Amino acid sequence: MLNNMNDEKGKILLATLAGIGAGVAAGMLLAPNNGLDTRDSLKRTLTKVGDDLERTVKGFMDKLENRNVTDDGSSLIMRGSWDDVKGQLKKNYAELTEDDLTYMEGQEDELFGRLQQKLGKTKHEIMKLIKDL
Image (tube, rainbow, N blue to C red; front, side, top):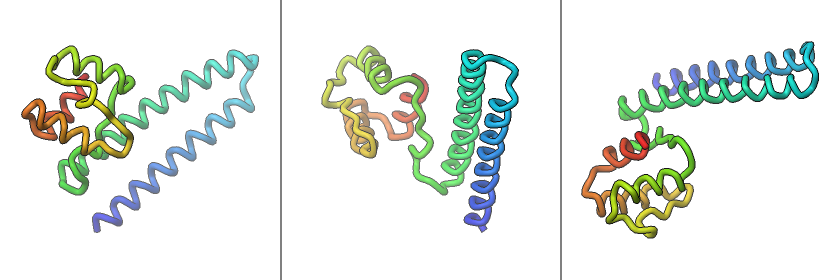
């Protein structure tokens, strides 16, 4: 039953993205503005759509985490670059070294493990800390 629900939500998300794409294409074809104005408008629209989509996906992932369908950390989304987050962590926690904060995509668990050990916090607390930065 859960897989059917996820499949349906996936189809809805795909249909939403297809509709957005069709709307953007139609807007470009029918735009009364010059190329520069159209590109600027398109950029603003796509940025807003991206932000809306990120919030939707984040909310969906949080619900899955809360129902224990996915593991903790599946919905970790950082604002800004890792360098920004790392700088803030170093500022707030002087005991953290460059080695403690080494991050490679796909190796989040290693990072969380180092931070858990160094800061004495749970994985969930560290995720919240990073999200809040």
